[in-house]
Image (tube, rainbow, N blue to C red; front, side, top):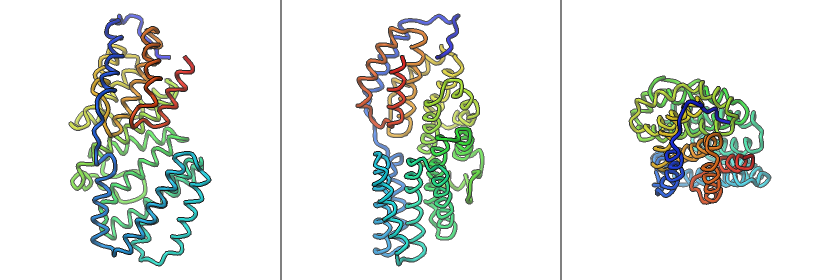
Length: 346
């Protein structure tokens, strides 16, 4: 339960206003983003493939990529046996393929990335990590030897996948890696503590339009990790995530910085600032990046606060959220599960 400073006088109107701010933010339209959806990355990669590979080679890459994605979708929906069978079939096709090394490496990268997700869903953590490392090695070769600079973006996605994987069973490692990636994306470190050649300056100069989207992804992953923790452990982990303070210098990432402040105030029981900033954050609504995840997490933290301070408003808020939750757009199942489990306990 949230610790409340008893000396703070809460304005009932201000607390009740939170429900109105939630409704206003919820009703704002979510605007799609080509960067956040991966469409822009796909366009860049497709142009590179067209410049280097024959049509049959491109078609084979598309076949393996599509099949790997189908296996991933099966796993995402909980059909693990079907997913594993699909991935095994795709692995046999790769073993039997008669294509050049460059094409095979590209296919292996996409396959290993998807297979790592399947292993993660099957709770085969070490196997998933080995696949992610292999995909990183392959991408590094393609980037350095075949001029696939666009795969630097895919390597950052793989590092993000490591953060997601570590969140399951090595939370401190997940936070440490997230710290490093935020420092890397903001130009405050040149390399990452993981296999491969890294160059922050090169990334920022070649693909500046991706920086904010990646920062959203990483902060969103940290938010998900913290949302599933007990408050004491969440505070310990967040105190280790000091790179969020670098976002104050990132103009595009103003709302990311604001969310991190909200989390800091919530975990530190600075309720006045928490109410003020979270109210602003709610009314500004969601978007197509991981800011949407952070918006939902803010709703959860407000409910935790209201449970400890103003039970009548909490009940109104809880009932409305439970009514809305199945209609929430771009809301991960993990968040919905956390909300439902929390509401059962209060």
